[in-house]
Image 1 (cartoon, helix red, strand yellow):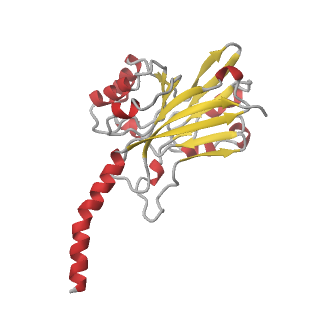
Image 2 (tube, rainbow, N blue to C red):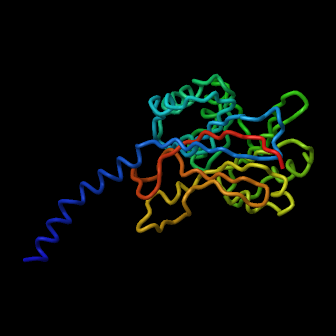
Amino acid sequence: MKKTISIIIIIMLFPVFLLYMLMKAHRDKINVNIIEDCNLPDVFHEFTIFFITDIHRRRVKDSTLSRINLPIDIVVIGGDLTEKNVPLKRTKENIRKLKRWNAPIYFVWGNNDREVDSVKLISILRNEGVIILADDYSELKRSNSVIDLIGFDYSPTYESVTNEIIAEKSTNAYKILITHTPQSFYHLPKQTRSMLNLVLAGHTHGGQIRIAGFGPYERGALQKRGKTHILVSEGYGYTILPFRLGTNAECHTIKLMQVNQ
């Protein structure tokens, strides 16, 4: 009798559990990240980035973006803007929502972006004024100071010519690497990694569904390795199933602060 009652309770609670995971996958969290760095040029003090990655099938919420009451200097899309069977119209609408700050938008490729018609996606990005960084860089200049935005193209083997670009640009510029996969950074030679000041990545979704704290990937976090700040986002969307457990649907504001040594 007790066993039967237990089974009935489990069956009754299961839809509630699914509803909770569905809600978690669509309840947006805005992470406010402040990075203090003595290597940041003075003229870029309080330079602010909006970072979003792994949108996948989701529609970006205007209600979430409207909660950001900061001036945004640039927007960074860290890959997986879309995926197979997502209408291109939805992708275009998401990009247009990210133009609300009238700030330059930068994009790097994720693995799922390659599932769609690349020609059509590139056309949408360019028509909307999005700057594509595929093993390339862009310079942000203020006075005589420079921030190098370096973007990795997606590579399942983590091989990228961007390693050469980083090494070649051995200037005093503040270097920000944008890569869809965090492992791309760790596969760089140690000397090259040490040249980077900030890394922005996604891909892992923080494991997306974690049972008792365990998942296929580590939780997203802002960490520091040597002088390099590394932000791995848990992503805005989801993959395969529209559920989350033990992780957040998140996007980020990143304010860079110059501090004395």
